[in-house]
Image (cartoon, helix red, strand yellow):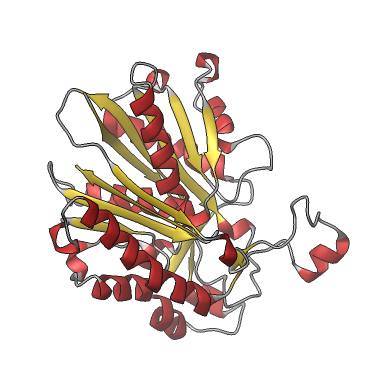
Length: 329
């Protein structure tokens, strides 16, 4: 028996916001955004649309593609840094919206920001290995609505983000497949590099917090670039080396969709051509925890995931945290 991905799904809101739309609101331009990030447009959730709504839609898409009924789901793990509310877990809300709460399967969230999906995948995979009879079909979902927490007057951050959800179904199967391999890491010394300073219990929301917009997303872009370029290639090479492999042995590398220029720099550092990856950031922006499963779905739709293909997923972001997953399709 082995654990493999048997379904993928994705969802993006219908509202498209282009660089030209942003240029009418803040001091920027389409040319500057494309030149520095590669992003042309992004999707923005409706005012009444929240991560659990997008996660449900991605989950249904995933289950439909896998040919598995919702009632067969034994566990739900959601990666999300922009939850509907501080409590309960988004996963519990998704369970209810899928109409399977009566089954009382475990449902919980993981918040490792843009690395969250790989952390969630690792947690789900570990639970399936530990209790294969209990967890036969597991939904792992990444969903985020950063449009709800960015400062739309801050041109340093608001240009990057879009809203979306992506999902995979992990299943116990009889097909002989090697187990997924993971490498995860965090360095809390960089916790202020990417953060929402207020809005939690340390600094609750007050009129002063709202006036100063301390409850919105902040990021030190140059420090993020340095962190990613130092940590991500090293982590990818380390995970591959553990199994006698190098980047050249990968059929497909799916990176967190942070910034097209960053992805290009990472691929060059690893000595890989851009045709060994696939990107969605140009049309959807940085969709945070959703970006890896969302892009995996795009790869599946485009026929890039052939049986036996060696695939590596790598997420990185706030924490500072990073995670890589090596699998055979």
